[in-house]
Image 1 (tube, rainbow, N blue to C red):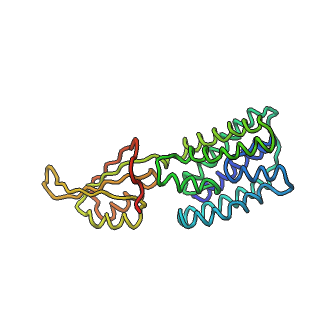
Image 2: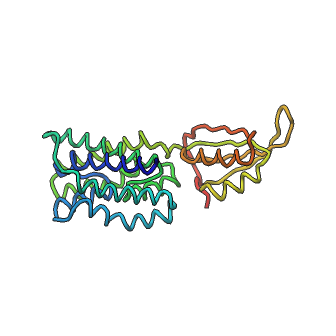
Length: 268
């Protein structure tokens, strides 16, 4: 099911690129934007360049993000490259401003879907997720910042108007990603349990986060309990709850949104 969503997301991204952005020389975000640039100024196919440029970052993703995300990313990169190759670059409007707006929004929807279901669209997404996991910065904001270089390149290669349209498109893509992909939101989890040591060991083996443990006792039962506190991202909560329930069905879990994290967020 997840692989299907990744493929559908890749199709949406390719539609946004080939129908709205590429016909007007507007670049997209990330490696795919560089692939579009190369495809516009050389005879090389955009889909093929997207695949070649992503290979080194796929290797990085395998070591930093794990096998699952890397496999989904590989599926996305291959399917996106295929869709970019076969979908004709035929504009649906002669208004370049509308093309920049809708290309950015549609591309952001597709990338947001891919990120939400344990994948990336490759390229700078991989770097953004790695940085986001150990910081308070959202994936969309990171991508927008890193893609500033794409805007500069488009300004040099084409003209300032195209650079401004590219900036608008990239900004809208980042906003749509953050609307759909909410994994960057930090949550605090408090777990009250009598199986604290077992849960602690299991969590440290599975979750890339530190844990603070305090002792307490039930106000009614006066039974000694352990309170595990950890700050996590939204996508990690289901795995944590599954681990906790495997050891203690009666554990009390309190989850609330964290406004800011100041200090070491990820465990070493």
